[in-house]
Length: 70
Image (cartoon, rainbow, N blue to C red):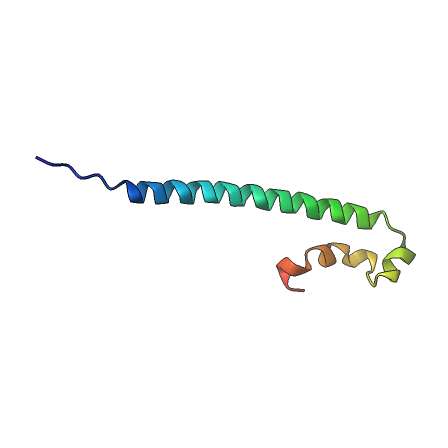
């Protein structure tokens, strides 16, 4: 009697799993980078923020503008 094992699907599941983990860590790194950017911008004076066209209350909106399409 012959047995057939399809390992191709198992590799696909494993690749999907590891791809998901890599994506998770990429999102964490991106969030940390954005958090640092917000902190750096919060250290700027109101005048410096005005020079680049941003008000203090819009710092977070500016940093996350590409994610929230605002």
